[in-house]
Length: 199
Image (cartoon, rainbow, N blue to C red; front, side, top):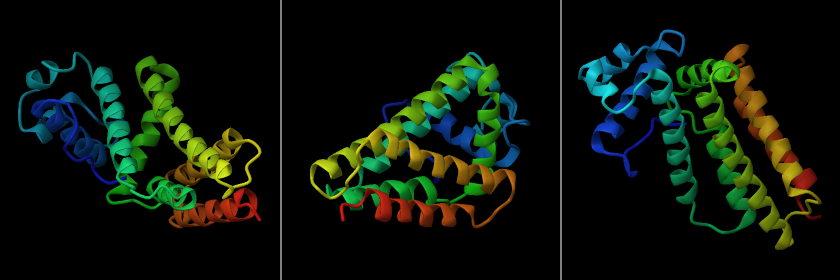
């Protein structure tokens, strides 16, 4: 996932804080991330951040929501309505769009590890995952209705693709398997062609 860009309904200050949070996460990781390190990236005092976000947890939950908004924007940029092309584009965005990716994926994995202990972070990760699953399911269901796919259960197919994506990201970060994302993209392609496609 590339660095978040501007263009949503947040204020200029909130946009700048989100950008600073992204840079600080990539540089310091989740474990060493502080409001101070974000403020340094932001170029202002910690008080300027606390004006918008009471706690670090509030800020990180907002950041996860921001990432979801950016992801939604990028998905909506795909102009084709052809089911196979839309599914391919979505899988590309989930697995192969990786500018600045290693540091960012590491920070996201660290944040996910906190989800069992942090309600706000867990709930936002759940929302992000649910939306991604919804997008996959909708594209597969539309393709099945159009006779392009032959999915008996689009929700199950979406879940299978999510498992491929999540497993590859975890292996890429945890085990330093540099080819994990490319191999997962090929595996997802094979799943689409041999399981979903209407022969």
